[in-house]
Amino acid sequence: MGAGIGGLSTAATLRRVGLDVEIYERASELRPAGGGLSLMTNGVLALRDVGVEPRFEDSGVVFAKLHFATRRGRPIRTVSFTELADELGAPSYGIHRADLQQVLLKEIGDTPITLGAEVTGFTTGRDGVTVHFKNGEEAHGDFLVGADGFGSAVRRQIAGAEQPREPGYVCWLATPSYEDPRLPHAYVAHYWGRGKRFGIANIGSGRIYWWGTQNMPAAQARTWHGGKEDILRSYAGWADEVLAVLRATPEEEILTVPAQDRPFLERWGEGPVTLLGDAAHPMLTSVGQGAALAMEDAAVLALRLADTSDTVAALRAYEDERRPRTRKLVELAYSLSKMEQAERPLQVLARNSYFRFASKSALDQHNRLLLDFRSTR
Image (cartoon, rainbow, N blue to C red):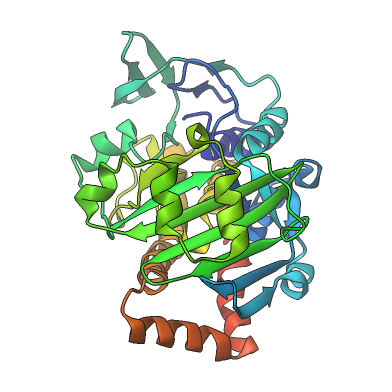
């Protein structure tokens, strides 16, 4: 497993149920990287279900409301999470990826982490599984959890070569140091335009996490090499706070990635090997559930492996439990992104009108589907 959110969450939960864990990470060092992210209520609940309760509030901010607006900043709707979070027993957080990594590293204690360990494949036998690395070294264990991200080598051996699913837009993101009275503590807003979106989240400590999207052919999204001025031109005429945070962002801090997920994989493992997190079910960002679903996976896996002598059966039970929910959310994120990236004027009008006038009960039902975690242990 890697040392990302999924791998560290898995190490924490497996240790909690009494298992020894080793982490193998392809990066040569664990340095601060990435930007902000949403850690939703269901991820917090899942870790708690196994007795893992980090103090996320020390490193992140509680997201109580989500504002939706037009590209010029005209309000569409504000959704409150406070009532549902109180009912479920945990809030949702905005947190920097590097800070979340540090929180989870504390939870895994003295778990061995081997860096510079790029997986090339694995072999299984009666006594477990052997993982092979690019440098020629090997590691052996009773089972292997492939938590090695979107380009998972473990998944590639299980599922074969795959092409990503590409909805046809590019994503820009950054987390600059920036303060603005229009963007108060824990402020979160999504701005919707035609074929474009922009998100802003104040994640505390003087940092703003933002992301933007723009429709374009998938091949162009994969090879986009524009700069900050190109992004600014793309958002000309948008809300003042959108342009302000863009102008305040150093160009070298802007990350560009194509929008990609994968068609849902029905077979996650073989023998003493399974997949977890983005390696199992990569998804688009429209429901903000990447981190939380990896934590759910980690919790269910630990609960299935606790107090069992049949590891292979436990791995298949974990997969059977996780597939229905993750399949539903992967497809929900894909369909929502198509709606959010609407470009034709009538589609944009229908999208904004539906969301503006949808009943509170309908939105609550949608959010409960996302945020409530129940393990069928």
